[in-house]
Amino acid sequence: QDNTTAWTKIQMGAGNSLMIRIFGFVAAQEDEQILVKSLTTTRVFNGPCLKWVAPLNSSTTRKAIPLGELEYLIVTNTLTGEKRVEQGPKQVFLGSHDADEGVKTAISLNARQFVRFLDNRTGKVRVVLGEAGCVVPGAYEKIKDDEGVLRAIDLKNHEYIRVQNKRDGTQKIARGEQLFFLGAYDEQIGGIQEAISIDSETAVLVRNKRSGQQRLVTEQQIFVPHVDEEVLKVQKLIKLADYEGCIVRGQEGEDKYYYGSIPEQRSFFIPPYSEMVELVWSRGRRRETRDLRLKKLDLRPFYMSFEFNTHTKDNVELILEGSFFWQIVDLPSMVKMTGDTTGDVCNHARSKFIEKVSKVTLQEFMGQFNKIAAEVYQLDDSFYSDRGVKIHSLEVTSYRCADDSTARILQQIIQETTNRMNKLQQQESANEVALQQMAGEIEQEQSKGALIQARIANSEQTAKMEGIAEGERLTSFLATTAAQIPDVQSRLELWKVLRKRDALEAVSGANSHFYYTPADANLTIEARQ
Image (cartoon, rainbow, N blue to C red):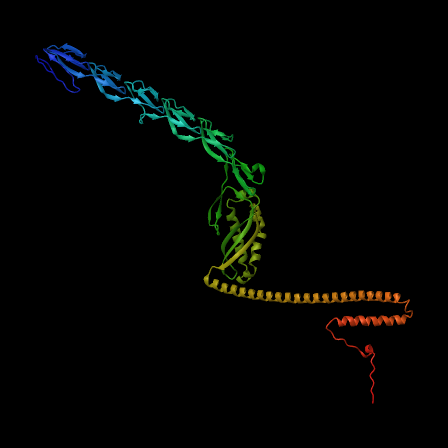
């Protein structure tokens, strides 16, 4: 819109300005400004206004920049390079040498948000916390964090974080319960960590990173380490049963032994600079794999199986299977003498078995393998006692030939032996049954004899009592009839007649037959011609 001649122009429309220029005059509305350029200068006139422009000058009109309540504008002076911030709500009229970077939206923060601005000129950091209204960066500021707006760290009462100041390198611990905002130069190290609940069965081993000293915290609390401390380990209370034991190795390499049978050692925490010794034993029937890891040792007697090959005197290869019944009785001696107790015990027994079996034939071995097993540990007890071990028994539970053909022959021998033993057992059982039957008959006859003797004694006693009663009755009869019948013999005859009458009455009351002898009937048989 350069004006070198007189003209009139009216331009109107939605959102456009109304400008009137008549014979070198330029008019601007209230939301417009006139930019006039001469040969040496540039000037601006903010509307509403009416300005005359000289013929050699040029003019343009431009709209003012409206800013809303949540908007701002960064303006740069192209001559000096200085910047400024224009914040709404308002209308911004640019200067003659001003350039803008476009309208931007201000930052709105809630109660849990914050933003950090870095000043490019001074290097200072400005922190604006939430609910601060519309947040607008300074002219030379930019958001420090790539994430832009940051959220405060919500820490519960059992949580904490470690924060480092990147300017001076110091660290601090922020623990809950709080809503924590990072400072201008703060940076969170790691994530949110949970505090450790220390109770009667939990302790914490911590190390001071400045001094290197370790300490064991056992006081019951919700534990948060100091800024110079780091948690090395959360310990659980070690509990030993009455039959268990363990080894704790200290800082100087000395071993301390704990036993569940001692009340003061039944439960404990591992002290600083110490560790629980782990023993590695061999396992398997042939003890070919050494990967059985133990920290608590069972001090009770228990069984351990074994299997190995050996040769008899007649060169028969046998595979022996059996079991030890053994026990750890001296823990310090065991640790001092061996690192693989089960391996040593089984290998030593194996060598002794090979020595003993090689001196007998297969037939001899079959008859005395239990005796050989007893000699293996009874005659060489010092080897086991030096290692703190006691062998209560050693048994061969089975044996077989390694060679198949020999095994079949051995199986036949075993079958014949088994059959013979079964027959002997059957015969012994039959003999026992016969003996029991005979003993029963003898006992029965003895019982019958005792019954007869008892009956005889009872009959004699009954007859005796009846005789006494009969005598009493006779005496009473004689005494009663003495006055009427003075003659004793007559009284006796009368008594006999009465007794016969009683006998007849007894017989007549039953279905019986009565027989009289001639003397009883007083009969006389005469022969007449």
